[in-house]
View 1 (tube, helix red, strand yellow):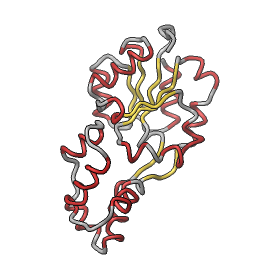
View 2 (cartoon, helix red, strand yellow):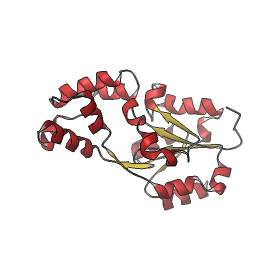
View 3 (cartoon, helix red, strand yellow):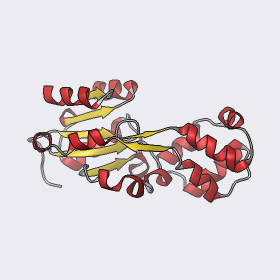
View 4 (cartoon, one colour):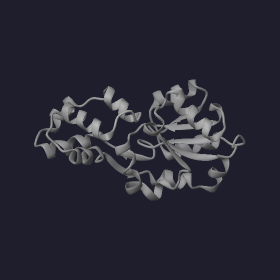
Length: 206
């Protein structure tokens, strides 16, 4: 990539900012497929070490689905589990799309990069679900492809290295306050997302 030190790089979180999602939809899907209650699966589900490893790309989809089958205690095929895993998605934030395509905004940033803690099974369906909207981003950086989750310093350092800038030239937009707080500690400029209007005001204030 070319040197972009003259302008900052804008990082936009995917799930929760760019598009809506609800993990409850996955649990409901699996419960219906397995003939059990959603409540039982809710009690069994947890974010654990294999989940974290999957988000870092350290284990394969097949290995994680085998773990998920055991964790939930369901007799479902990999295809059924994957279908539920990807049933979480709602609509893309079209108002955000309009903002990111604004020529004035684009002129103020070297690049607009979508960022996400995610996994191979989720990321591979995004082009089908959100293909046209993904064109609003110059690049997507996902935890499972670089082996690091945000807000670990290495996640941001990877992007800074790709664009030949320092952390202070990265502007992060994320819906999780703990993530934006940590990013600020690391030297980034960060905004906790609540609405496109508030985001627009924030970007205009920079």
